[in-house]
Image 1 (cartoon, rainbow, N blue to C red):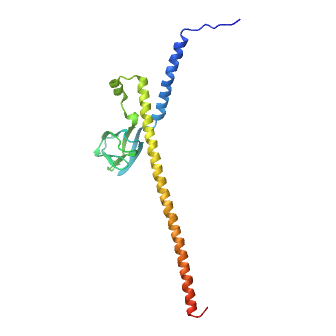
Image 2 (cartoon, helix red, strand yellow):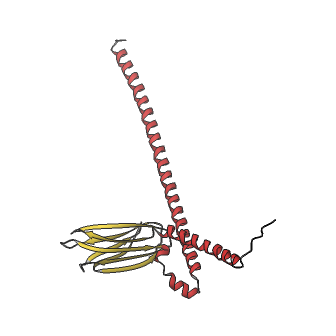
Length: 218
């Protein structure tokens, strides 16, 4: 006898919903992994007459939001520096917030300068890439669902990650070219020294040979 199991009519819809949830769960997990390093929020104590800086590695054309706030309302100076330029410089302020799109890839530094005679505590918040973007406004404007927003965040995070990888690869190639050029120069300098020593040694032998002959020693 064959035992025929009865099919539950709700099984297929449940299976379909489960399959639909899997990509969303995977996308959310990937977004968590990719965006975990794109935010920085610290409270730092800057001693009197000293300067402290914090860096964030960002890609080109990436949104970066930096916010400085003095906790005890003491005035300090704030500076945001890219690899080759100064983006923002504010003096004697208690709170500064700036947002900009980077023009070049590489480390961007957020610096706090305390010019007072006492130590000061400053709250520093840095958001980069998808973490700095307000996706609620994007969702309202483009009428996106939650799953589409998550996928958009993952897509932009992957794009920024790819840009960072290309930047690191290009920097590695430049360093390799510099090392190769330096090694070539060192080898050339060593060969020149060897040739010079051989030439000087030969000249000394000829000089002493003529000298001893002139003195009739040999």
